[in-house]
Structures are given as C-alpha cells and as structure tokens.
Image 1: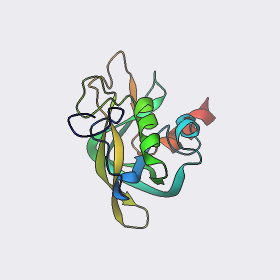
Image 2: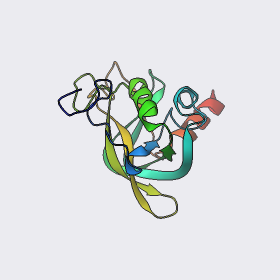
Image 3: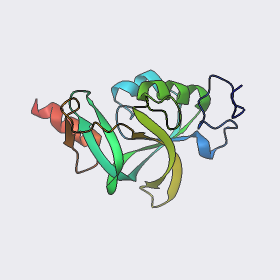
Length: 162
C-alpha cells in the first residue's frame, strides 16, 4: 500500500474506489476507435462512446506521429468513453501515454479529470491525458497545429495527401 492508501500498482490520482464518474475517459488521438492504440487498450472494453469536445489546443507531433492536447481557447474533438474493467484499462493507458503519476517530472502526459462537452449539449467530466512536457515545437519535437481540433480529420487528410 502507498501513503495514499492505494495498492502499490495503482498510481496516485487513480480512483481507489471506482465510481461511475471516474470510469470515464475522453480520448482525442491514438486511443480513439480505429487508431493504433485503441486496438491495444480499449477494443471490446467500451460500454458507451459519445462524440464530444474539450477546451484546449491540439498539435500533431510530427516525429512521434500522435497528438498533444494543451490548455488554450480552442475546442478539441474526441470520444467520451465509459469503460468496463476501468482499473486495468487505465493502468494500460497510463503506460501507453507515458503517465507515471500526478506531477511526476517523467510524465509525457498528465492525466486529470476535466470538463467535456458532449454533442448532445450536456456536460460531463472524464479523465483526459494533457501533454505535460515543455518541448512542443522544439527542434526535437516539431509540431503542426491542428486548428480544427479534430485529429481524426487531420490524419485522414494527411493519409490521403501522401
């Protein structure tokens, strides 16, 4: 057990008592249905999927091949997911997203509960992976802004152009 009272294999910031609210995940990149990390982590484990958006800015990381969500005034499109077997799934997603634990300097993404606007007009909250490093746009991590906030559309256009 950790100091927070969680089993040692569960990072702090992961709900110990998983209630319905905390079993939700909003995905906007490679974890969306049809993309490379979906099959590895979420295929067959989604109870419901609802289109939605969050406030923020989206960048495609050219050398990595996946997006980064950061705070900002735009809207970012994605999928609001309710999941079964949440504990196992979130630990796998944490590894995929490079999330070690809250505020850890080695995090590529920081996972936190954030507001999601669903396409039906309702508001919900869900876990979201926010990009945590300060290297966006650096020579080591070139980026392309995705002004539409829709990585799926961006990737379809990129694939059809190439």
